[in-house]
Image 1 (cartoon, rainbow, N blue to C red):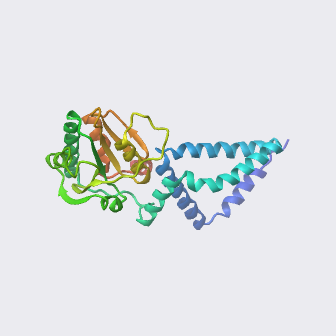
Image 2: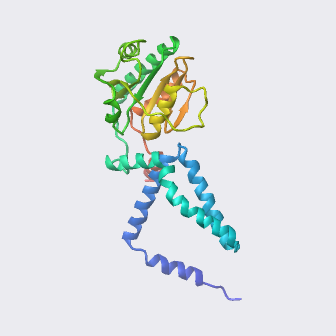
Image 3: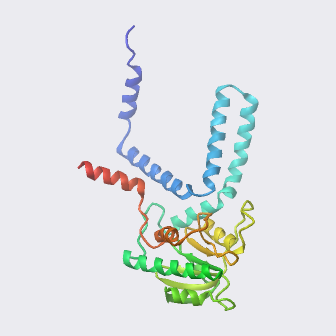
Length: 281
């Protein structure tokens, strides 16, 4: 039986129609989807995306098997999902729009401090958290990253002082005006204290988490900041990021967790590709 070369011929014809602008278009779309994935990969939104993918696959399978009733139900569900998506992805959509508004959606992160300054600030924050934990003094420290938190800082008392452990410990002295609320840290400066943070609306959180922890998670759902929390009841040190909280941190794990807030965040995917390309050359 003669070999059929129809399929390779069609592929060759299809490739011949691709212009340089088409390649550029595909690359831009791929970068946008990759940045969107980066933004949601460590959030609750990734679970919603998986659910949407499952519904899409079920719709295709039901259509292929001619399951008319199931196809109709899934189609109607998809129509309702189009209305519900802006509500379900509200924190992620807000974060994406803020990135676009600040011109940072496709731009790689910039370094806030050099390595020596970053290590110094991290050491001071870790030292502060350790002492507050030992005395079971409640505290909230918001480490600002790319998204500016001016709308949060104006809810507190403007300070603008160089970060040091002694300075931060004085801010969180019990029964003083600055103790309640959050301290906003930008680079190596404390810009505001006694700030009010939005509480999370996630009702699935453990009942062990108090108002400080819920406020930390609430802010982390709306921006890219890292929020360090010291529990007043147990002295436990936690960090909230992207709507999630990591608890029971020691000095080493806390330092490793907060250091990216002060140093450049490399794009591992593109960084690895670039390093391999250079190695081949």
